[in-house]
Image: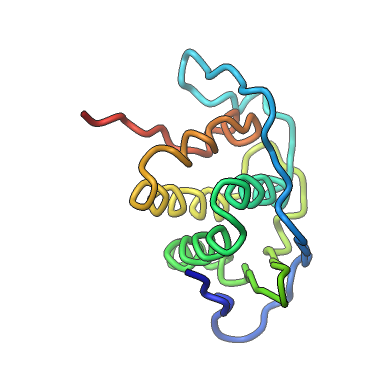
Length: 161
């Protein structure tokens, strides 16, 4: 299930930070209480950079599905979202021996109160893939991450009977 090629298209744009991941670390902890209103708490959200949000998603996926599956799903989601967000063409996830590395868009390093639109597109496409492959299980796990939930980054899944 590993697509070990990166998703860059065209020329080589200026790369963003390269992050090496030796192994996934667990992001498990106390399960936060879900919001009652269902509305994202964007107004009170502390500034955080898209790089950190991406890293949270990477670790959660790697913890649940493994690093190879996380890399494959994020690459596929980025390819699907790149038409709407050309910035995602600079996202690269590669494997070097047993380690995965990713290069993120340079603009994802600045802390902002509202997540980068390209990251939101990536997460939306990722959620579509996850629902198709795992049903609501992994989405529900991502919803438990306060930084993602509080920014309304994980679309609510309707339970179908």
